[in-house]
Amino acid sequence: MLTISEDLKELYPAAKLGILIIKNVRNLHSNPKFNEIKASVQNELLNRYPNFNRKEFIKTEPVCFYRNYYKKFKKTYPVQLELESVVLKGKSIPNVSTLVEAMFTAELKNLLLTAGHDFDKINFPLKLSLADGSESFTGISHKEQTLAKNDMMLSDGTSIISSILNGPDYRTKISTDTKNALFYTYIPSGISDDAILSHLKDISNYVSIFSPDAKVDLLKIF
Image 1 (spheres, helix red, strand yellow):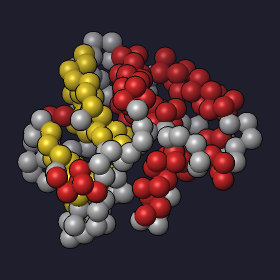
Image 2: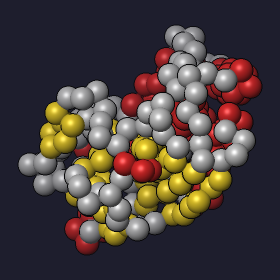
Image 3: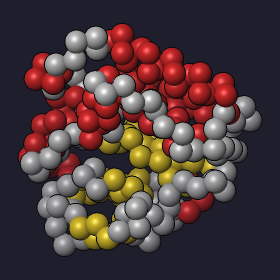
């Protein structure tokens, strides 16, 4: 199902990819019970960071591991910015689609970088490898994305489906017709297996709220 390139193992020896496949899902525009969970997580974040200080926050785990990765590319960890929009600006977790919101809510709660795709649009097997800087793919916003050298990227048998810096692609994106979903979290270094599994289980638990017939098909760390 997944291979990891030798050059990636050499450059990022502690890298991992946590994968969750959930089948028989529904992707709704909104769900009242799940909206309550989103509000609860938002309140939890406000209580967790009553006096948010970015300088101190970026030293904490797991954010520090992502910060170190993004810093090499002169970029800021986007999940950090998303969290700041909630705890500093009072923004709510948006209503986009329930599958995307389940991923995003868990991402904010656990601060682990996560991507989601329509499982049935993916041409398995997957390969986790390093970009050489010449690659490009159509991003989720339908714009061409050029990869940075040494960014971690995930490809299927057809093309690149995501990278850490560029996010997921357009071809395999989650849509209103998605019946089976693939979620995964990029781990550059430092984060325990328990934390990864707990994060992915949060996503599956959220999905079960609005898709009670959904079944976890795979939950595994590579």
